[in-house]
Image 1 (cartoon, rainbow, N blue to C red):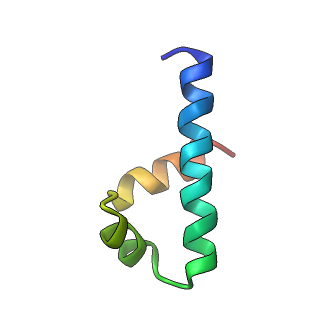
Image 2: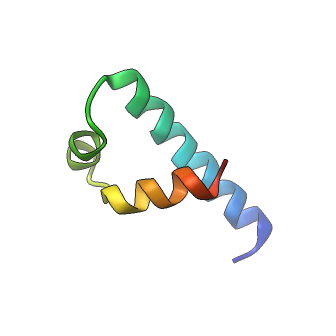
Length: 49
């Protein structure tokens, strides 16, 4: 994965992370509604700090 691809993925996940925080939902519920996998969100939350 190139650094630009990593940056794009981080930006995408950061948008999801921000929307999740604003939603007031649990991480599992947010992921279910948006067709995401909770373990992937956890991975990107840690990876893109």
